[in-house]
Image (tube, rainbow, N blue to C red; front, side, top):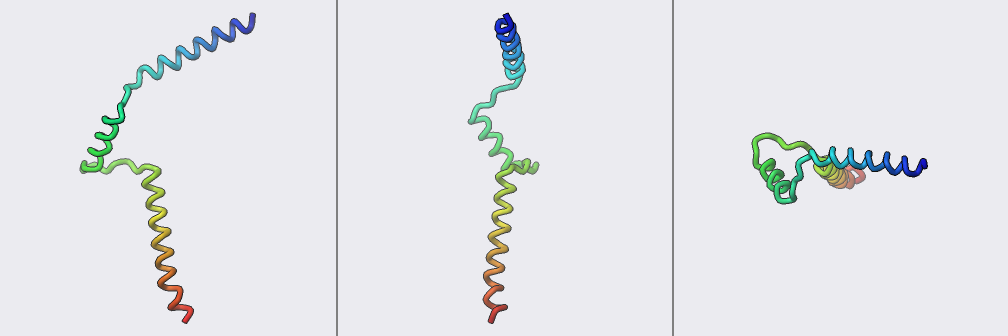
Amino acid sequence: MTRGNQREQDRLKAQKKIAANAKKPKESATTLAKRKEAALWADIPRPISDADILRAKQKKKEEEKAAAATAGPASKG
């Protein structure tokens, strides 16, 4: 009989999860794209995403590499 009880408990848990997710408004891809585009043109700065942080790190690394490449041969001469 414990399996029947476990099934019932799982069913209740799943119903709670569905009810919690149903409260959240759904956002389509088009509205998400519009919101992101509006954030680009707004005066309010948009939140920094992980991708933006990684791009900034990559750009900094490339600049350091370029600076080392230009300074490297001159100091060895």
